[in-house]
Length: 270
Image (cartoon, rainbow, N blue to C red; front, side, top):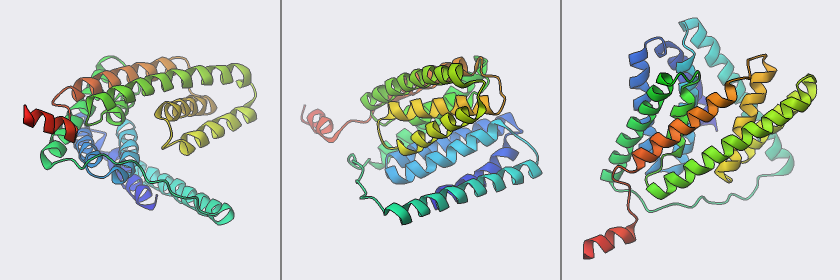
């Protein structure tokens, strides 16, 4: 968590500056996506940390500014990270540290497979960003994030992840719409719903991906409403970006998808 906070603080500043040049933005997006693809093939824990960092980076790129803007954003991100670390530390002190369940790990990728997936990830995240911008999606980084999160070394894993992402996004939009219909005129309960959905997004990080996607989508829409932003169009924007990113990731996974050890041995025996 500390490593993620430091990384997010740094990229919040760097991304704010680099975002002023569209070509540098695309190059930086491809580089970050490639590193993300390499990590998922080698170390899932480091990939999860890098995922938080690249999300902050893409957000900063989307909202460019001056050096002073970058410093202000970095300070805010650092403050938020410190609050989160302190809150988690407090909860651990009160209720104790839970038993860690080791994540299931696939067989270790070969160097060639790691490089191939890094290249595939770099292409997918860049293509998704460009496609979303060309389609007029206001928040084009949503498509890039979808492609990055959905894309897996295996074709089947990517397909399952894509379905869960789309299903979760639709569910989150529906839930947020219901909440806004019931609580739009009552700020305090609406804020409570936003906090609850954000808490669910944090709590379900490593649960079913569809549930995580629904919680994230719901919290984003509710926070936009709380900030006084325009909600109409935000739902369709996020859904369109999800469809674009998911389609690009699925197409990318079809490029020499990774085979499991059993599949490789069977092919070698033929």
